[in-house]
Amino acid sequence: MSSPTTTDAVSAPEAVFRNYEYTVPMPIRRSTTKSVPAARTPVTQESNIVRNSVLAGSIAGIATSFAFYPFEMLRTKMQSAAAHETSATTVSSRVSSAKSLSRASLSATTRHRGPAKVFFHTIQHGGIRALYTGLALPLSAQAVYKATVFSVNKVATNALTEFKTQERRKVGDFAPVTLTKMDRFWCGFLGGAINAAVFVTPVEFVRNQLIAQHTRKSHGIRSDIYFKGPRHVITHTVSTQGVLGLWKGCSMAVTRDALGCGCFFFTFNYLSQRLPQDKTSSTLVAGAFSGLAFWLAALPIDTVKTWVQNGSATSGTSAVVESVSEHGIVFTARRLCRGYQVALGRGMPAAAVTCTTYDSVYRYLQKYM
Image (cartoon, rainbow, N blue to C red; front, side):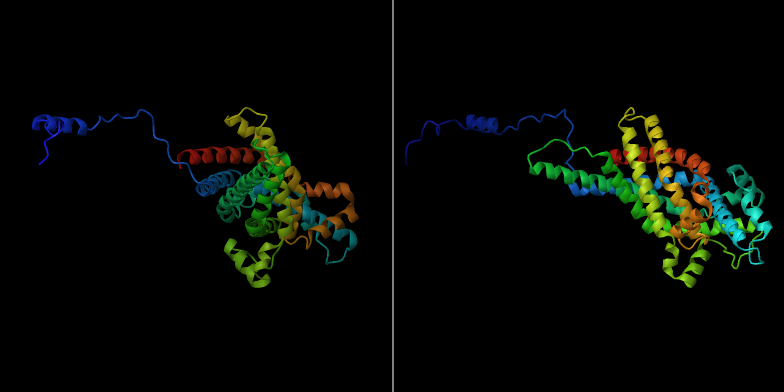
């Protein structure tokens, strides 16, 4: 056997000590810094944006609809009265036979012009409950309305920003992208168009049928059929006109909401950049003037849509052309803007509440969910 080396000659206790020395674990030091969560993937982040936007829009829509629906109902009644006034004047000027409208029905349709008179006339012939005529369907639909408009606008804005960012990077420009005012307009335009084409048209058709029925009943005008509620309107329309009958006036609704929502988001973005940031008061002001912009663009188109949906006119274009040829531009403009007091009186505070509610809920969801 070979003689032991110096290392081999180490005593057993010392060897044990050395092994122990080298195998003692180092003390664990607790980090004082908080762990950083893993970054969200683009797909997860996009899905969260859509989910939170849908939830925030739904809550904002329900709150706004329940609070301001009586204004919506009064505006529709005033628009319907304007259509009856126009048609009654035209018919009475052309013929004076028994087929023309009676003086009683004519005076009934022209007597209640202002919002205050329409309000008290409605209360007189139906009580407070009459102010919520046809509410059930719009209330449930408002959640879908606002969720669709805000979500489509949010997704379109993010997609357009990403597209412009990628295009800039192709030419070596890595500066952050800022969307123009017209970009904001077209994103809102898209949200309003999709919402109107898919959801708004059939819901407003049903609502307008019920409101027009209440108006005829309060004026003593007989109708061939009495609708018991939204379901009855839907079943009757489908059986007599088919499913597409519910989308009567769709082109006018899409035009109204596309232009209106485009102006809405254009104005909101413009004011948001010039008002103090992260303040509720700024959101309220920007939302109120955005609502004003919406109705300034949408009210004449909305009036024509109401005429088409309640049966006062077969075509929006023909109704306007006929009114201009018979009564002139001034008379037609007054008829198209009938109910502007209610539209603006409701539209501005309702938009302020909608924007503030949406912004608050969306921020909360983005932060905690």
